[in-house]
Length: 257
Image 1 (cartoon, rainbow, N blue to C red):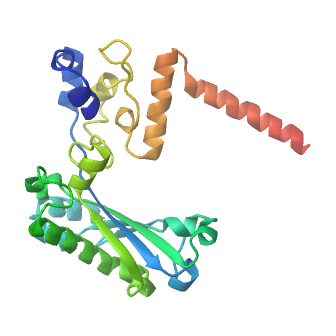
Image 2 (image 1 turned 90 degrees about the vertical axis):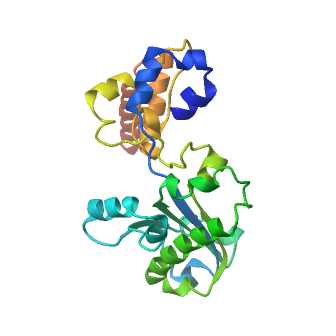
Image 3 (image 1 turned 180 degrees about the vertical axis):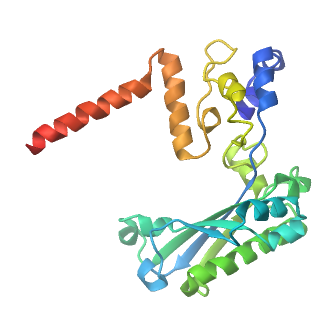
């Protein structure tokens, strides 16, 4: 929604009351910090699993996250409250044939855009020692937790790269480095906001789609796509999908008989 309205549209179109109303209701989601790792060894050698792990520092996730986001960047880098850890190569049944003896890991967490904002105008890969040192601190402390999950990878790392909210801003055009678009908190889920942020916009033939239209993540983006396509076609595609499923199920039952 931010890129569409604030970057795509000219100022006169952006000034439409309906669009300004939507923008007032929208806030940016938290920035994302990612770590991509290349490993020397197969999933069997390294004990890797085709599993998504969510690692937490404690049971009070809300309190821990609030303290994390309120802390200085130096403190935050050493006290990351949650990590999403996944092994893409272990999930791919063709991986070992294509890349024998190699594996990958991907790690995701949240990081405030403001912690890195002072380097936003610097050139990619030339943001200076302080930026690289801060990024390395985040990576190092995240990896200490990952080594507890997968201890055999510690001396098998061939490649490791950390990405900050500025990385997301540069490569995927996230305005504040967010990975889930606009914030989908309680305010976003109020009836007024749901009614205001719709697929059809005040600009003729301009439609919104994706996760900002519905909820964050893959399924939210998929639902947003169905809502958008329904608006474009003036047809309820949710009913069409349900009917297709019913017909497919019936066909499958007949074949089974």
